[in-house]
Image (cartoon, rainbow over all chains, first blue to last red; front, top):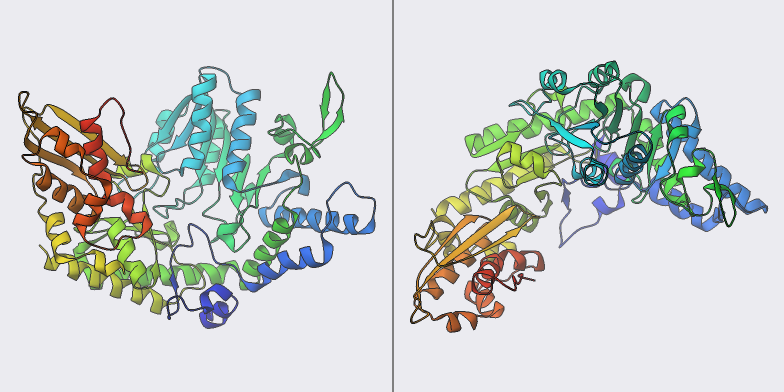
Length: 411
Length: 130
């Protein structure tokens, strides 16, 4: 993979910050965008912009076609049986809220259990807490092992007939762990539970096939996978989506409205009240085109190279002063690396790396239950992506060495 | 600019914070946490009931260099003050004492100990740093 050529597609990475190129290592928070995505979005506003699904004039019909073809594009990417199984949402957070709220009103009863995992992002915890608070649903969490992988023995121990939903992240946004979703789905289905998958961190890195994963619902955000912010998708099995009550009320999502009653529209329109993010959907479609043009195998190989550079750099240049969290085997993880630098708080690490022109994230990464489980107040995270070079990983370690030396002097 | 925050004096306070640890016989206690970074500081005072003078002060917790150094410097200032005098310590005093340029995100870190002091002095109002 020619990283120099790939970088040339990303305008932000070619623009100096404070006189030097930026080392952007926070792609797990949001990815940078290629020109093709930025142009697809602005091209829509320049040439096709009209509200969808309601105009009889040609421009509106064109906009509707562009929007619906983006839906079909996402459906093909996910391996959906039909484009109608794809609901456009703002992102994975809205996707999970939509599912949790619908299941809470339709399927779940007091005393039913929802099983999440201790490594989830808050977006896959808090919507289920709403159900715990409001409907008396029990919320439990699967544990992890010392390498940051889900403990399947704990899954077997916890799964029972009262478990109605198992909700799991495909890839951890802190540990990088790839979770065995298929295996979890099979075991969950065996007790009659539905499986919800948060694919926010996997879609940027691996082809996600909802059939192969055995999921019932799956959601992701476009902006972490080269797409625009404010657009994402929720996929659900058609028969389940049809059962789910609407999430928001408004225009577009109804069949009939009267003073004394309302009839809702079909899926997916039922879940898309209001004017949708048409330009975003078109941008997301362009992002998936970009990723598929490069090819998932190429992406995976390059991802492994960056992982290797991170692990080896850490070992050779900082030794036991740097501690990585998560699995060591690259086939069990993605390039999302959280670490602790001995004697330096993650906030100080991130501040000083920023002074070196390097963007990393520090904090609890919206995963407080995981921070508690790991026994750390916070971690620093470096998450490279296809546009990062091995030289940039070197620059990260130059920065970390300098910080470690600076803090050591004072002791 | 960030390197200017990490002066020798700041790092010394971070590595060996003054007045760090538990305080037996504390009469007042305030706690502040910054959920965004997982930092928390508890500040305890032992106040003489007659003179209202702070006889001893200690803090405990976990935080970045800026928040720990700032809390450490604050405790140095507090020993021997009356509650009234402690009350007059301002946000700007605390930031000024650090003597380093702070980005807006890090001002919150620098004021964690000060917010804990506020809670110790005024448990009924529970003021926050911002």
